[in-house]
Each structure stands twice: as C-alpha cells, then as structure tokens.
Length: 627
Image (cartoon, rainbow, N blue to C red; front, side, top):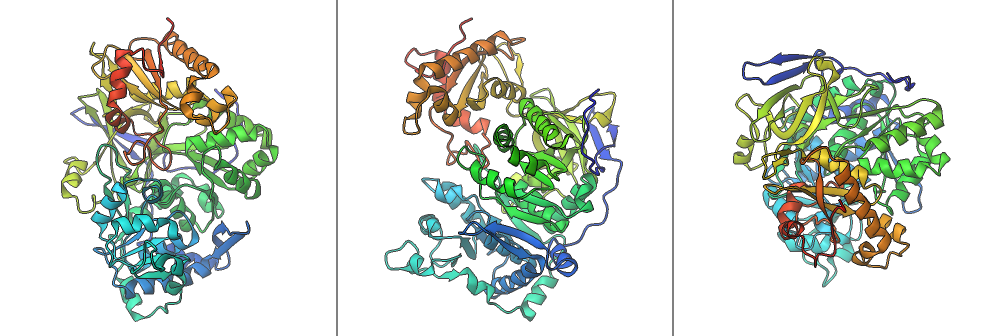
C-alpha cells in the first residue's frame, strides 16, 4: 500500500455504490448518496452570486496589452440582461437559435448566458470548421440543422466561411471591425452586420421578463455537436435540468468546490462539453473565477498556458492528457511554474483520452517537490450526451484507466456486448439528453428499452468481489476487432501501450488488423520531437524528417520492442507505418482538442492499411520488427 501523503480535499458522492445483478447477467450500479436539490435554471446561479458577491471576478481574459480584463458577477448580470433583450428583440427562438463560431472570449460567454436567460438555445461551433476546414462541410451541415437566426463571430477572419455557408438574410454579430466586414468587395458586404456593443446597449424590458419567466428545467439551453467521424456531427440537446443536475453531482463528488470559490485557468474549447459545460458550469455554480487561457497543448501554444499558470494559482486544474504532459515536462526546468501551480491546487482532472502512467508519476513527483504532498488526480467517464459527468474516480488509489463509480443521481448499467465480448456501459439520469436535435431516428437508436443511453464504451469492475473498487475503462466496443484467427484485439490498451512505448516521438496510434493475420499500427508522430531528435529545423518537410537515420532508428527500435514485449498475437504489433500526413479535421480524424478518431482514420486511409499489410518495399514509412 502506498504511503504517499495527499493534500486534504473534501470528496464524496461517488465513493460507495450498490450493485444489482440482473437475471440476464447485466449489472446496475448506483451511488449510495442521493442527488440533492439543484436550481431550475443555470442562470439562477448568476443571480445568486451577483447578489452575494457582486464584486468578485467571474471571468477574465488577457487584453491586447497582456493585462487581465475582468468581469465581475454584478457586471455580468447587467451585460447578460442587456444582450438577452437584444436577442428577444430579434425574434430568436428554438427554431432560429444563436450560433457562435468563434473561440472562448468574454463576448462569447456573455452571449451564451444571455441566450440562456432569454430561453434562446445557442450552439457553439468548433472554430476549426471555419478557420481550418477547406470545404466548410461540417459547418454547412451544422448550420443547416440549426437554421440560426443570428450568428456571432469575433472578427473578420470568419467572413469567408460565413459567406460560403450562411444564407444572406441571416445577420452576423462581430466584436469589432463592422466597417471592414461590410466594405465593398468584403465577404460580408450587403449582409446585416452588428457590433457587439450595440447588443450591450439594449435596455431590458417587459418582453425580456416574459421570456425569462418561461425558462424552466426542460428548456433547451444549448446544442452541442459531436465531432463526427464516419457520420455527420449530431446536435445534442442540452437542457437546463441536465446542466444544473450535473453541476450538483460534481459538487457532491468534489466537495472542495463548495469549501472555497474555485479558481480555474482553462483553455478547453466551449464547443466541447468538458470546457463549455463542465468547467464554465463548475465556475458559475460555485461562485468561482474563470481565467480564460488562450494557450493550447501544442509546442507553440503551451507558452501562453505556462505564462498564465506562473501568474494564477488554480484551486483545481483541468486539461487533456497532452496538456498535462506538456506542463509536466516544462516543470522539469521551471520551479516557478511548478510552485505556482501546486500552491493551492486541490486536484487535477483529465478527460478526452487516457493519461499515461509515466506522466501521472511525473506530476506526483513535482507535487511532492513543490509542496511535500501529492494532489488528487481525478478522472471519470462522461460525454456530450450526458452533460457530461456520469462516473468519477476521486480516491488516492486512482490509476490510469480507472473511471470510478456512479455520481449521485446516475444509474450505470453494464450490458454484455455479444460482438466484442465486453460490457457496454450505459447511463440513465437527469443529466442525460432527451435526444439529438431534428434527428428522431438516431435518437431512438441511442437508447435501450429501459431508457439507458447506449455509450458504445466498455467497462469492467476492477474487482468483481468489491464493487467499491470502481470501474475500469475497457475501450470502445465498436473499435475492438478479431484477427483472422478469431483472436480478439482490445484496441484501447494496445493503443495506450504504443503511445507510452513511443514517447516522446509518438503522438497517437491507430490499431489495424481486422480479419488480418496480425496486429499493425499507424503512428501519428510528434513533428517537433522528431525534428529535435534529427537536429533539423521547422522548415524541413516532415517526410524528410521521418527519413532521417536517427528518427528511423527510433521507430525501428520501437517496432522491435513492441514485438519483443508482446504476450500473444492480440498484443504483438507486427508492422508499423509512420504517418507523414497529419490527421484531417475535415474528415473527422481529429477534434480540435486533439483527440484521434480511430474509425475515421481507418476509413479514410484504407489504402494505407492495404499497403501496410502488403509490405510494399516502395512504402518508405513502413517499419517491420527485426525479429
């Protein structure tokens, strides 16, 4: 048993569970702690904190001069009511909602809360669909489903995408640059373009009061779109009940949120449920302060995150595994960053992918060096359709792959999946969506006959004799496959092993082998790390970098290691292909959080899979074990 000392933090809610075994072999788990009261509308929390702590900073973001621009709870309530009136005046509704195309900023958050106040659904859309996409296909699909009555984009960089996919009669709101956007020859010329400040100038009146009075638990607060892989993105309906219930679940599991107002430094995009529901909601529900981080977990983008964390000490810190990895390595040579990050942090939490045990151990070591004790590293399982949290692992014995126990109010059902032989995990509770917007067929397919949401994820009990040890994530049921021998390959563990073994040159791995004789892997490399190993500059094309002898030697050694250390055909990687082409967001291969979609990569690169198994000598990126 570990003798490590952990920082004191109040936890509960998901530390005990009861397990019902059904006659058909399925298991149903429930927390022993009931879900407590929660408000009817998320905006009720804004009213509460504007009354109790009007001068406390609610949100802040660095301005052009690098200084923090802050908005207090009192100020935000005033802004929200003004903008909400402007939305009502423009006749927005569930059939003509608000679409937000640009990234996290103060105006985005104001508009989102104003829409909730007025009972107008809004939909934050990945900025990559406007700024990176070449064909605007996903943006066109999403706006076609939404039929928005108003679109917000921070600046003119979104004009090309707007002109390409948005009907000319739909007005656009921009933060600044109205004259530039509507000048003769500009992409938005002839379209109604409104400055954001014009919305702030509206005076709340009786029509807003009447609209706000109609908002209740079942009112649609927002639409969040799935990233889409082999299918088009789906619009997940998020109600106020879902958002408020889930925040109460979080508070009961992470009791330290109520002990002091939380302070967050956060970059996670608001078009995803982790950043837009979990973290914004957590801040607002508990009267905290959110510092918008304009950084990203990339070699270049991490610099801004590190700057912010050297200045602001969070009380709880959220990121994706790649972000924690970048920060963990930066702390190796930056004690100021390390000491500031751990000064008052009660817990870390990751989502979106598995955190490697090597990075986990490094974070523990940095915590002990900084403050003489570790902080909890919390994880769990949630998704866009569940607002998002359904299970949490909050103990000090949590390890990579653990997803914990049900949060209060959520029922977890484990059902045998005949195709994979695994247990699919399903959810029911007040945080689960009513369905997909304007898609009744996919809504029907999403639920079983008891009303449990079918996740497609697999889980198993860590200890079948002790349910309170919690659940272990067991991959995706649809990703696992059989070799030609009939042997099952569990993709999740195999992928995690390849990434860990390939550190630091491997960013992600896509596992191949369906109906083949052996397992293969297509590896997405980290270009910056490959260039560093080769001693080459950023101007050198990636294919040339991957051909460098030192880089080739690294991947050859990796192939040999994966072959040598395997325990059987299901885990023995017999061939590797190092991908010179990065994942495509247009094809659904990657999300803007950097998560790789296995099915989309396999679908769109099927020719490469064929080449991988044909072992073509002409394939310069094929690596075979030396054996």
